[in-house]
Length: 142
Image (cartoon, rainbow, N blue to C red):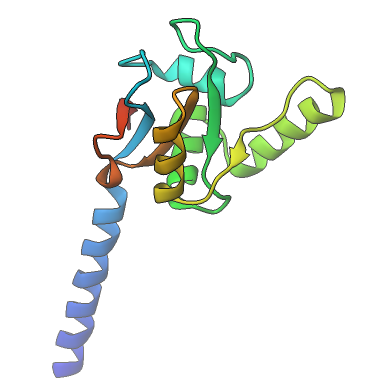
């Protein structure tokens, strides 16, 4: 009986952790000094797939990815870009091979991306919403 109770407590604890991860909100961010206050999913998708290199106000937009395998990157790829990591690799391989594009630079984790974006109004990235502070502006969440 006590073994069953222990297993049940572990299972409940794990399900709470999984639920918390599943409900974590991801924020697409720009520098606080960037003139754009909100972007739609299509605009963000176009910037991160190399189909557009500017924000709606006409200023240059440079996308910054988190490192491969990062949870925020996986969520961003699925929710915003609608592609898996392997689909994106194939997409960028074709563009690189034909000389028609280069993928976003990888720049570490949430803290690294937030710090980079905060310092450059032309950068756009994504982070877990919990790390957002006054140095950056949230333009989209999912």
